Length: 171
Image (cartoon, rainbow, N blue to C red):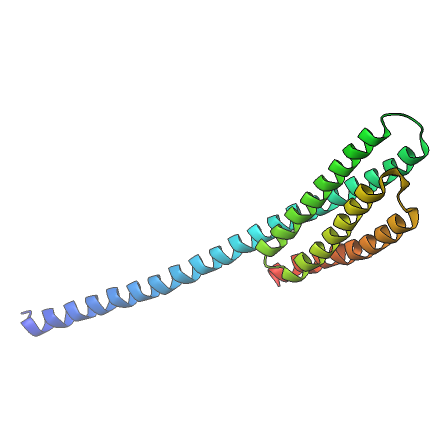
């Protein structure tokens, strides 16, 4: 015959088993969720860094095209040179904005050091814009070359840092 004590004993064992299963399930689910969130965040950061690198390189390409075009424009005779220079200055402004966008994306990805380097690079673009606006087609080629060298040094440091930044996301 089954006594009340045996029924109580069985109920307690079943209750404890369910409680233990619930606790284990809770912790397991939490751990899985945290892992998935870390992986999602890492993926988002990677995407932000890639987009930042693309914008940064686009900015550099525009600047190279503008500088080359400015040299050609300065040696070419014609009435539309001043208007063409305005177009080049607008292109430099677009390059500056692309660089600032790249910087903001680095901040979002948690790469503040890279963002600060990109800001320095944008500062050189700003200097170049001011120089072209001030000197027009009588610009100082040495200034433009020195500015380019400074910007290239910063750009190379940024590009090297992007690889390290990507590695740090998963490291």
